[in-house]
Amino acid sequence: MSAWLLYGAAGLCTIACGMLGVFDGRSFGVRRILAFNVLATGIFLDLIAIARRSPGPPDPVPHALVLTGIVVSVSATGLALALARRLAGARRAKTRAEELRR
Image 1 (cartoon, helix red, strand yellow):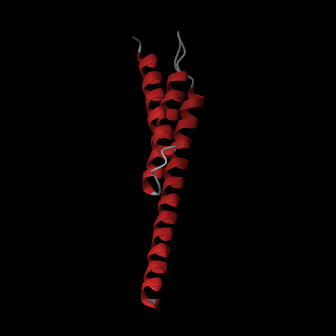
Image 2: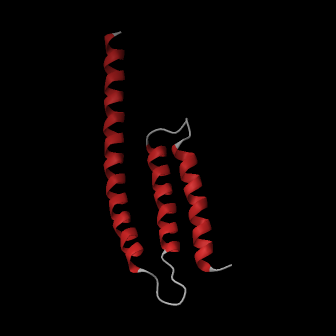
Image 3: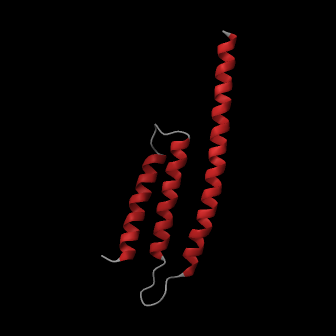
């Protein structure tokens, strides 16, 4: 088994795990954000596996795309976590206000 085939298979397994976490009906908030990160990691692995050329060096364009994707993924994860934290705080404040009214 060659290395690029192993990377491709690992990428597909990682994508499947990420999809399972994303479409699971019980996962909300941070759990779903982490599932999207696992899904993105699988896609990155598959892009690196596709970049292989038989006789020569690997294609640099997919590698550049993966590096850019990692930067965007980290930024989007930070934004999503900040929004999830703010949403959780708003829910807590609403619950406290309802308890004080009783």
